[in-house]
Length: 322
Figure 1 (spheres, rainbow, N blue to C red):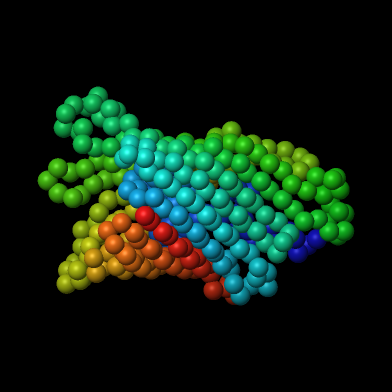
Figure 2 (cartoon, helix red, strand yellow; figure 1 turned 30 degrees about the horizontal axis):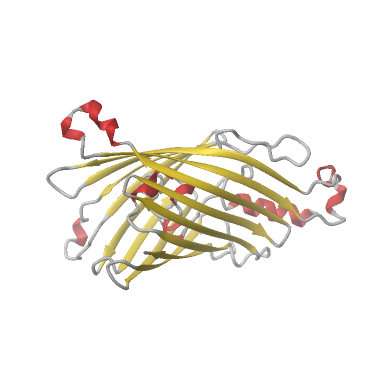
């Protein structure tokens, strides 16, 4: 039974703080490599996990899959996370998505999230401020989701009062809400994204025996193209982006920072990120088979500051856009 609780602690460590269930991070290689500073971006299949309003920025339908290798090198070496998602834009004014995430350890414990996402553009919001701002965008989105937590209970675990009943899994339903403002400069390609989102608004109880409510998570972020660094003036950068984010959960405030740029006409992407607990970096490769179809492969490496004897976390994402 002692090993079981060690497994669960490792799962919780991967969220950044020791906290409750369904308090996860790193839903894609891109978001992880940006230090999870993704609330003001959220423009791919991982978007619903950070800001459901963000998927409306997508111009093409997308299918995305992610697999994470979590803390290889530790004695507990079978912690895995998988994510699948599908996003469909609708006439540039709305988008829908369906996504699934599973986090498990050694066939003993698992967390599953299934969510349906809808995002809508409400540009009439800007009419309140006059004609000069009408080209900006105001996006609203939400998730309706199912949360399922399950345990595989052996004889040793039955000694704990929590597992002495017949119940080995719990299910809860909740919803999320997100907003995003996109402010454009008329004279240039520069823009500012401001995002805010709230997750697990009803805080469902998923405890086996005693009450155990899923924490509400509040996220906020800001993103804008970043001017070239002085020492990079001779390097041709396509779309440099600087992102900052913050989240509030269980009375703890966390900060996230990310930088991304593409090279060679968006063929290669370089990403860096940081939080108070880890450093991240990543690469992306985009292959366009025509103007209509894209295949994107992303990789992320996250190195924790306080966990030794491990090579960190590794994520691989594959996206198809068409």
